[in-house]
Length: 254
Ligand SMILES: NC(=O)c1ccc[n+]([C@@H]2O[C@H](COP(=O)([O-])OP(=O)(O)OC[C@H]3O[C@@H](n4cnc5c(N)ncnc54)[C@H](O)[C@@H]3O)[C@@H](O)[C@H]2O)c1
Image (cartoon, rainbow, N blue to C red):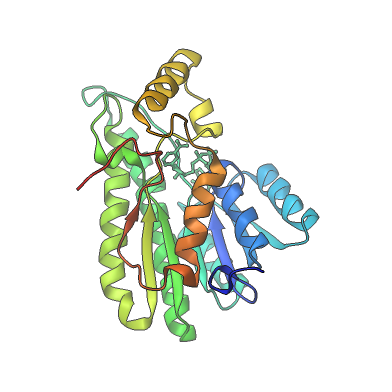
């Protein structure tokens, strides 16, 4: 028998980054749990594939091609979704450059997508939830990169650290409306994003992660989707302002 707290029947969810990797796995799982899922991404082809996968599995999906740097487009998608119960702000990009090589343009681009894209999504979703007088759950995508310093990851990890601070701050402001805001900070997950690293970097990093993890494996997108489902559902009804770290145990902060 399904566990009622995880049942999303009758709920509406917006998932950004839904065309690929973690966002796609999340969109599929939220739909499987019963939500009507509004999938948003700038990759129209991937988006159509995700929507088709959800429909094939018997779920409800609507595709919204958009760029998270475009506030008007996000607002339109939130409006089109109707009363919103769940928003998962997952869209993001990788960037590597050393601190000394980083340009103003690099920093502006990565902050615009990885931080301000999440901020815009959270703002539009929270405003709609408050206006509709509905409690809701917002889930942001941070990264294990916020717990460690690595060469080349300044722009990426600074944007993700800002996402953590956004998550905690928004949680303090929307809690009185019954809106919970939590972040997921995954470890290394096998997705097209990590697949774009060179084979050497990929092999070395995966080997290091397997060595460091008590579970002796790297993560799959479905591992992270399960964490998002938990935070999006009533199963996490007393969780807000928290950072959940599905990372195979590679970091165990106090
Ligand atoms: N894969 C990992 O190891 C890992 C670890 C920690 C955090 N994350 C985070 O998880 C999220 C998903 O990553 P993934 O590994 O699934 O990557 P991915 O590349 O497979 O998917 C990212 C998706 O975001 C979309 N996207 C990127 N920029 C966008 C924009 N401006 N507007 C709209 N859509 C945009 C892409 O089109 C893509 O569909 C990202 O925020 C990433 O930083 C990933």
